[in-house]
Image 1: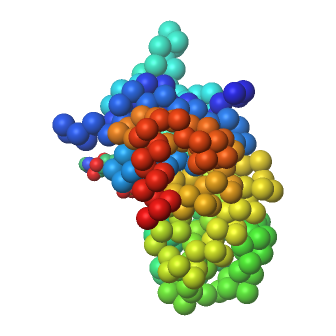
Image 2: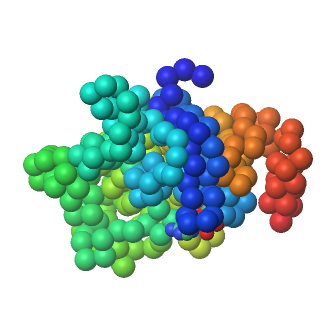
Length: 258
Ligand SMILES: Nc1ncnc2c1ncn2[C@@H]1O[C@H](COP(=O)(O)OP(=O)(O)OP(=O)(O)O)[C@@H](O)[C@H]1O
């Protein structure tokens, strides 16, 4: 594997006495589309939340784009805990799409997408609007710019959330079960947007999902996580058709038959 853009190096995460990640080693290459699967509570969302700096780490080092995420280099080359300024800089490399959309309810769709580019990146309002309208076109919602989130379906809101994340031009886009809060008939339209992104963009994508068929379709690599470490990983056609580890076999049998 060449040029990792994400690297977890022996990362541990504990909540009090509960160990969620246990010496996790995990890498994602630049431009790679990786899906994390695994049982409930295995630490999948925690991995994404650590990358978004929503959770800190208990031990080890996380590297993003060649720089430590939760640390910064001291003058003597050793790593010291990251300052808020370092975290702020690193956050600009990542975007995240949450299960529950998390749009600002009191803002129009357009404003939801332009707010951070104007406030954080310093774009002018016309520049931010141009960017937002291009993204709304990409997610098939050009006619909805002036609507409020409550006037839209869950699928449409999630497509806006994807446009909003992309408006910050992240290098890495994280998806945390992006379709699991949707009514079944709305899942397809959101998957279609993610599929298009996966096939047409060089963006690095890291997706947590329970939708195995979708994972198989869009991923370059699938990682099966159990009890906070990577149990087995591989190309989707290998992992889904011929898993090597008994635990992976058991998990896939349960979710594919269930
Ligand atoms: N803030 C927290 N405080 C205490 N425990 C937490 C916290 N966040 C997560 N956990 C625990 O960490 C474990 C892993 O959670 P995580 O959400 O990463 O799992 P997951 O694999 O994404 O699960 P699911 O598929 O159900 O979403 C769970 O046992 C969870 O209860």
